[in-house]
Amino acid sequence: MHGAKIIRPRILGTTASCALSVFAKFATSQLGVRLCTYVRVSRGTHTWSIELMMSLRRLLLAVAVGLTAIPMEAQIYKPLSFKEYTLPNGLHVILRQDRYAPVVTTVLWYRVGSRYEDPARTGFAHFFEHLMFEGTDSIGRGELSKLIQQAGGDLNAFTSFDQTVYHMRVPSNALPLALWIESQRMRGLIIDTIGVETQRGVVKEERKMRYENAPYGTWNMRMFANLFAGTPYSWTPIGASQHIDSAAISEFKQFYNTYYVPNNAVLAISGDFEEPEVRKLVDVYFGFLPPGPPIHRDSIIVPPLAGEIRDTIFDPKAQLPAVFVGYRTVPEGHPDSYALQMLMDILANGESSRMYRALVDRAQVAVQSSVFPYELEKVGAAILVGVAAPGRSIDTVEKMMYTVIDSVIAYGVTEAEFTKARNIAEARFIEEKKGTYQTALALARAYAYFENTSVVNTEMQRFYSVRRDDLQRVAKKYFGSPNRVVLTFLPSASTEAK
Image (cartoon, rainbow, N blue to C red; front, side, top):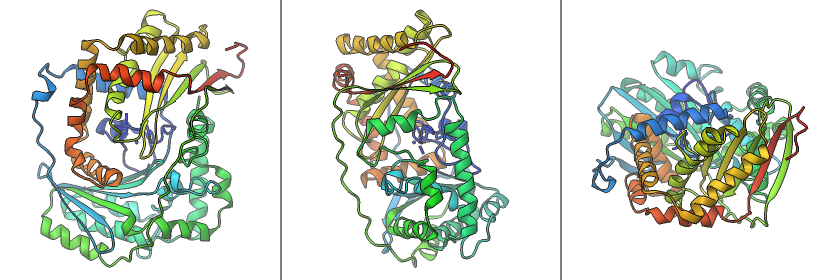
């Protein structure tokens, strides 16, 4: 990220190890943004610490517990009102008026993430997240952020597997500045040796800090390499250092000219503005930009997993053994995704979850238990994590995690658990619609993923349609077989056998 904050795991997304932004459903929430991460604090794809992820989930649970017991179907939500249209050059524009405060947020969502990269040139999408803060034809190097900050605003960006997103929050009277800067970056970015070499160093240092020198830092790279082998989701947004190092200036320019074009972007503007004036500004700053060639979006075929894949990593940075168990689930918007989100909350979200109570509170074999759900555009994953308590076997931790899952498969969930999970879903839904940044991001995401912005107002109804036995059904369907990836991290000095 750049100088502002970040968000999503509705992001419970840029985005995991940085959990990549990922962690797919909490990153876009305000809590995720405020507590930083893409897990990331500064930009791009960074790795959430397990402690931070657990803290975030505890906050969500605390909010949910405070909700009333009114049946969710009986509660009424005021849908987000918005206007949308598409410029002749293909840029899709979404406008949402919010008079609560004299501020405006712009979200410019480019449909390019790591899955669009050449396997021999990974890391380009994340690299551009940094490079876009260099200079343009009309803005000097290092001046872009200063212009927004001097106007009283802030800005940032994040990258994930499917998208790269740039956002600015400014006083209402500075909206023309924000739009001008974004139009400059869209087709006027300077890509030269100075900027590229500067950002090469920044990205390499970020990789060392967030991945190579962090406890369990490579877990998500290893997980996705195994879980989605043979697909563009097999590498994470941080990419490979050697690919960025060996790339020529011409390759960066080609990537920019392919993906940073109006017909590959969604512009969402939320806040205090006059619609006629904003439409004129959008036309002035973006209307003249030429479209790029149509973006080729390959269909993704994911080869089936043939049983369990295991790997043991001896990690000199880890103080305690940890196990990461990854299952394939479903992409964003799949009918089963809503039951799966609720199931994940019951299994491993917070100190009242089944795994935490079983492993940490009662058996005391673990010090942490959590889940990282990823709902991406074309695939999905659920990564269950257990960190062994001092002197306890990581093998025991793993077996107890499966025991908790098997219990849900066999007996389902209780009515109290189901109610709590629905309350959490409602709290998360509300949190993601508060504030100009959250609403702009939600609107842009809905159109970018589904080309149907109205989804932003109907998603909660899909949670309402989930029934208690659906959680048992999806537990059996997605966690009932040994088709999974198991990564065990052991401190380097450890002689403990799995």
